[in-house]
Length: 112
View 1 (tube, rainbow, N blue to C red):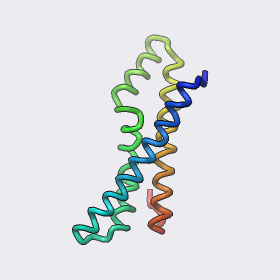
View 2: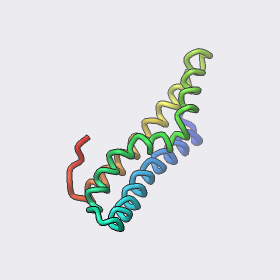
View 3: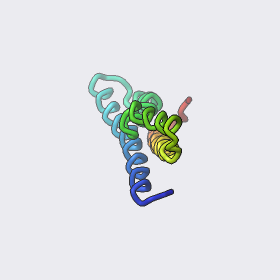
């Protein structure tokens, strides 16, 4: 079931979600510095609020995932449900890892 192509997709999903969190928080921190707000505080807030968007970006949009789950439930393609679940889990792990890295950089615990 775990083909080479699926493993490659899971790795890509992990790092896309990770990159959305890291990039969004750092670039947002630069923007906060430019307008006179505390950059570390803004990075802290952005890391928590970008999580869901990182997951959506990593899986390629929510409608494709919902369509795949629907096809798995109603057309009997159960393998598609598991693949989509693994993709969401990989994206969630990437987003959480990025959030933990930002937490470490900022030095404050995130309140989830």
